[in-house]
Image (cartoon, rainbow, N blue to C red; front, side, top):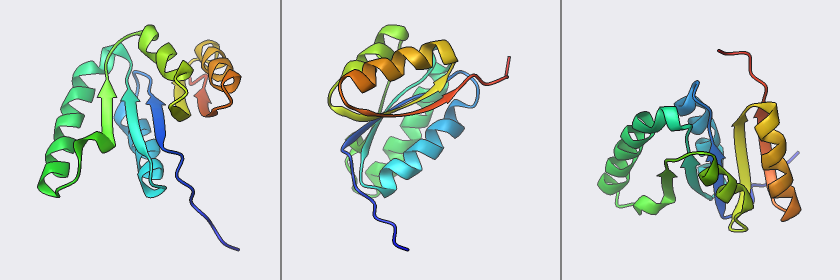
Length: 125
């Protein structure tokens, strides 16, 4: 049995308000191991956490002479998430959140023949 990793290019990760760093970290690790760059879009209520996390990443990248653009983030509402889902440069979109929004993300990604990972319908408040 052999495992082959194939980079896709740019991966979009859209996280919910609960455990945004954990979900981002799981997706980020897999994406980087496979040779991808990542754009993270958090829930609007987790914006400060996302910016703080990216500052840490940028300092680690800088200390190790790696380009900061390997991992980037954007903060905003549903319009940003929709733009990520529609963007043909996002070869894979990972979405964590409600089933209702997950269906919308999946339709947008599939319509442009992209790949998506969905974690939907959690039971956290």
